[in-house]
Image 1 (cartoon, rainbow, N blue to C red):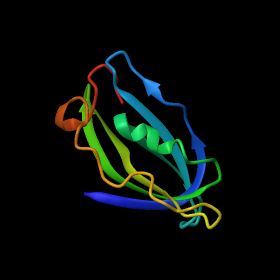
Image 2: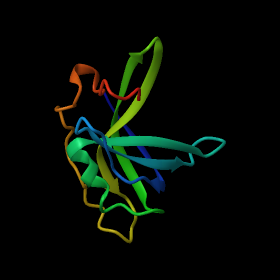
Image 3: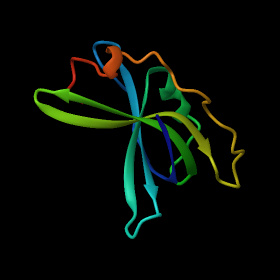
Image 4: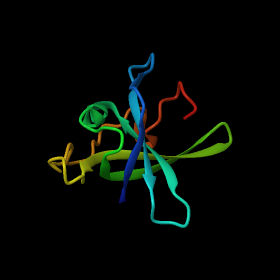
Length: 118
C-alpha cells in the first residue's frame, strides 16, 4: 500500500553504505497539518538514494512512500520507505524526481538487512 505526505524539508542526511552493500539515505519532512508540527523521517533505499540529490533544505515536497514493518530480536520496527519525491515549490520546476517504486529490496521480502537492527 502506498501513502503520500507533503511538507517542508527539514534535514537531508548523507547516504549510508553498509558492509553488505546496502545503501540508504534519510530525509526529514516537517508537516504543518496537526496542532503541532511533526518531523517525519523517510528513508530512500538503493537506487532511490540518488533521487534526493536535487532536493534542498527548505523545499516544499510531496513524498510517496510505503510502510515497512519487521521484528528483530523480539522488538518490532516500522520504516517509511520513499520511492517518489516531487518538489512542489513554485520557484522550482516541480518535476517528479522518481516515478515508481523499486521492487528490488535487499534482504528479502521484509526489506531489511540482517546485519543491522533497523
